[in-house]
Image 1 (cartoon, chains in turn yellow, red):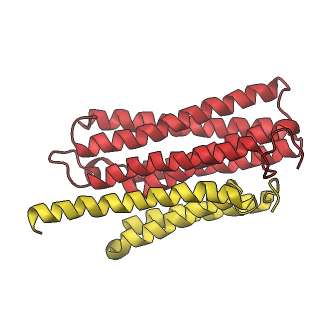
Image 2: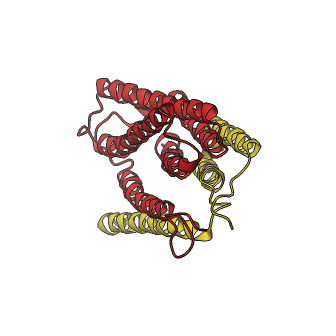
Image 3: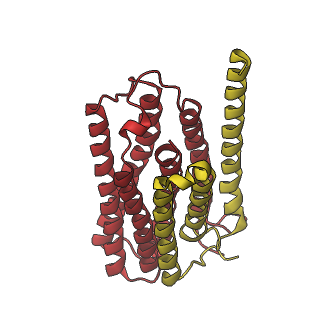
Length: 100
Length: 191
């Protein structure tokens, strides 16, 4: 894969349109009472799609050398692992202390 | 590849170093977002998030930052093809959209402070201001960086030969955007 190959202007505009549409859906879902039970997973998935679109197309990871994906993806996965671990430890400790 | 900054892998060393820096930034923001989540719903006194967060206003800020990312890639594409007129225009647009975002954040912080939410008011205030304030500081650095490039372009010191400099600036700017995508969801929409 080339280090210089990037997307076309048309692709950038299409990605921008998709990002705006997803943001509108996110805000719409937030205000619809019927979605309240599944709000968190829906919002997390939509947010992840936006994140991936920006990283793949605007930061050019889709077209760049895979080593850049490794440099970014490794710490990102580590950060996610730390986040999940901390949440488990914290709420596990609260459960132990309160018995609930 | 034979450019002067090539590594033994044939990749540009500046770009490689910058991706490593962005990786370290993932850990910084990961820890701040973790802290926000750990203390979510633990405030003993108000104001609470649902009482104070303004979703329509923040949605506009999100739209503004997404459009700044589009302007940034258009600036890079223009510089790469040697169209410096367009390059200068889109660099300025990106910086201005960043300034609008910062103006919105200053207004939001000022409004929250007058509503009674200070840095030490409750756990929500502490974690909210540290997380969004750190992001705002990154946006500020990005705006200064973009304006510096724009001035360089005005003075004729930025052209296709410096496209990698613009690309690295873009990487930073888009990273700031993806961090906001996460903050908008975790802090504002999931209350």
